[in-house]
Length: 449
Image 1 (cartoon, rainbow, N blue to C red):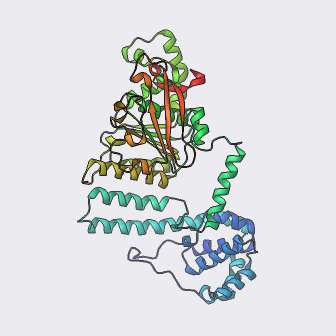
Image 2: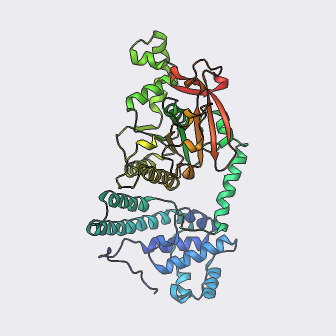
Image 3: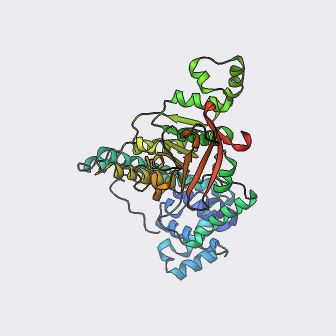
């Protein structure tokens, strides 16, 4: 019939495949437009084992995409125009496809069989590459090799069909879908809600692929703000969230979460002086907080490789939607770098790549240098980002946290905090004023104050 595929040295035996399922998929597509729509969601051309089937699939998809009928006659005509009819086994073979399919209604099910076989083949190929990393990686850091190996396995199971590059004609529908989604929400946010009304109105929520930097001087409340974002996403909206805390223990974080949610003073929790009312409020909120899809990792001295591996696992098992790293300057890099600034820059860039790879917003909490303290008004600026390197460049949104009462106890703005949106790649910059309730370890909208 047609040529058989040629595979590399990883395939010492015949690779997994199911020719009957492939034929039934194509036959169903040739008989029904609905079948094409079902299959497109599951398969791409390189999921087929036979090159001939890949060619036929491409032609069907092209015709369907142009709004033209994709049946045996039109597909044969298109193959003839492209000079590929002989490569697929001639007209007789194309007509055979429609004859062998039991029913076009099952095309989606047959497509899953084809997809599973393709995943098995990719797993074998990935395993072969991983073996070569082990034998040939004498001049590379072991951590880098492990990271590459994990990426190979992740790529096998990752179901996205994005290519290295796409024409605008293929990107446009996705962009229009997003615009329509925003419109259907009457302008309400489609990103991860931060829990702060004015901030959400400004940013439309935190969006997949974005890196958001939250920065402040020590003891201003940047970790608290990060946990407020986590509470909004996981507890209020049920979005799977992970907090990587390189500064606080998981018990300390949990106490802060409970204090904020139940409105029980953190000091009372820590000092064992909770009142009966405190216990009642805590009991009311306990189950909802406990059931929230919120994961906390307080492993010390975490590297970017570890964070990436854990996020990939959470994405696959729990549909991860939001990542918070507290804080950026405490992360370590296994690589030897010329300076701490270069090291932090590499970590920053890796966090941005993680956001894009997993299609989730990543919040990186960061330290500011002493710049604000040397100014009269103490207000932070983007240039104050400590060991900034490429942090500002990588970030889609930079939120600088400022509290006047942290520097001046008698300030007329005591209890207020400014969320200075100093960089906003896809929108305007502004300052959002919120209330700081330090005793409850939280920030809230001014209206709730």
